[in-house]
Image (cartoon, rainbow, N blue to C red; front, side, top):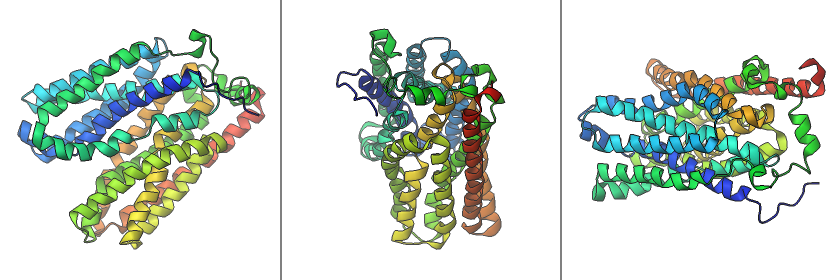
Amino acid sequence: MKAAIPMGFSGWKIVARCALAQNIATGLVFGSFGPMLISTEQHFGVSRTAATFGMSVTTATMGISSPLLGNVMGRFPVRIGMIFGAVLGALGFIGLALLPSFVLALPMYALIGVAVCLLSILGPVSIVNRWFMAGRGKMLGIINLPIVVFVLPFILAAALPMWGRSAILLAMASAFLLLIPLLMTMVESPAQIGERPWGESADESRASAAFTGRARQPASRILRMPEFWLLSLGVGIITGTTTTFVVHIVPYGGHIGLAPEASAGLMSIYAGAGLVGALLLGWIVDRLGGAATLGLTALLQAGLWIVMPQTSGQALFLASAALGIVAVPINVLHQSALSELIEPAGIGRALGISYALKLPFIFAFAPIASFLFESSGGYQIPFWTMGSALLVAAFLFAAAYFVTRYQVATPEQAI
């Protein structure tokens, strides 16, 4: 029986601050890039292909820096790392607003990538793991709600003609700076203020079992854990397919004859459904576990990718919404699954390494889909390829599930 959560529990404030940091970092970066792409081209006088390279720099920096930053955040206060990320994010957006050359702007995209890594990926999950022994999935679901990503494109559509690109970017830089006072008062561990993690007493035996054996290994031995590799590679496949959807769904709509507004609507309903998915899957992962939930969502995604070329009209919009529910919250499931394997002190390093392992899939899958489209003249083969890859991911998650169960059942062999 779970203990009741006192209304004065400070963990709620911690979750709210982490959610704000995550939304400002991820939301302002990924929610603004597409809507401001044309203004970026015009400001720097570059082609669309060149302008798009800025996002590649951001995502590449996130993947390359995440193992190093995860290691550093395990040695220093997490709030210091998040404050540093807020400063870098502000500097990055100020640079994008004021610098006249795209070559000079590229390092700004790198600064922004580090900021997102610290504020959205590593910082919040490190703190949640210290405050919550139970219900981590739900808390991570709340923190990762893509609210700003969902609403910002609509705001920018109205604000860009009135305010202009530079003013909006400076406003975004100010949002990063306003985070700093909140982050300075962040309490990283309940023990610092005489509280205990949520669920520590009621779930002591379950928590102890979850961290038995390999979960108690030092962080330096994370790469020796087969379940870590299975989960990371499976998550990499899912992340690659979600990137493919974001890149190709609007062109796919045009390919099948949808109007530009309707094609854009496929992307909007996908992102909006992710708001529901983050909460729903956060609740499910607390009951089924990370590997099992990832396996089920991978199977659902595989089926949706395979049937999408045969759908049209309202059925296509329903398929996009269903895919958004199970695919958009991949960060919630990824973080939750690793939290079941790694003790709180090592979660930052583990997540950083795991995120780096996703990078090849992020870069490769969308171009592969483009090549298959150009070779076949349609989207059926690319979509079926994504579905087949997701079936492989489901197999990897099933293997991780059984390996983890074996390690818990025979801890003496895992030491």
